[in-house]
Image 1: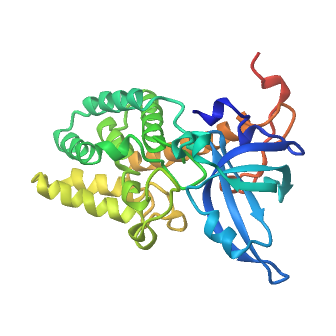
Image 2 (image 1 turned 60 degrees about the horizontal axis):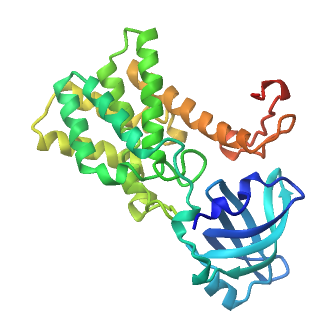
Length: 321
């Protein structure tokens, strides 16, 4: 049974509307209100996205019942707080086995099938002519093959869905290919290798597809340092030495652009600079595209925290007919 076929998705509901249906608890966080009473902050999701809700005056039984990766039946109203939609819970109860629901029914998936994405990735790797870079990239794809095709690219904000990491990489490769035509001075081999490997460390940084969170290593180290170190290890195993290895490590190390954004070094190679901007473009367009898809023409999106907390307007004349 696919719940998305039986109810209107949570992100498709507008302010003031009533929601009733099944949702997956993505995250459950305990809190204490100003009056001293406990409450739960629940991040509820389905295939269209997620919404925050509060379960006030939560009992000990509530805390033990409404936990992550639990499917619940919820009835409530769509409200707003600080520019973001929330679900004000009226009633909430656990789903029953007879409902025929599974956790995977509620996990958002890439808009492009993973098989198609994998084929496009392999085509791009074939275009890498530098033998050292191609061998390193192929070693990583072989090592992380199963995880790469299903992992999200983040906990939240962009490409945070099944196969999101691969979708992000393939989209960036498409941008990179066009930029290499426009700017032929770019080294396509280096740019492609950097794009493919730049976020691969997230397979160690993130816990998985369901209820995605940061691992112990992810919290303390982060995907950038872990990946830089692993590139060195793989190159050593393949007996590859030289400038390519160091420059490839720099591509990964600098792709966030600034120290305050998580990169110990700023881009100091032209391909690293381009990689940084391609990463930004794809992440921002993914966030905007999904937010605007759930916004009516003539209205503003909810506030997007990762976009400087801005709300974006959807012009009526740009609506496709």
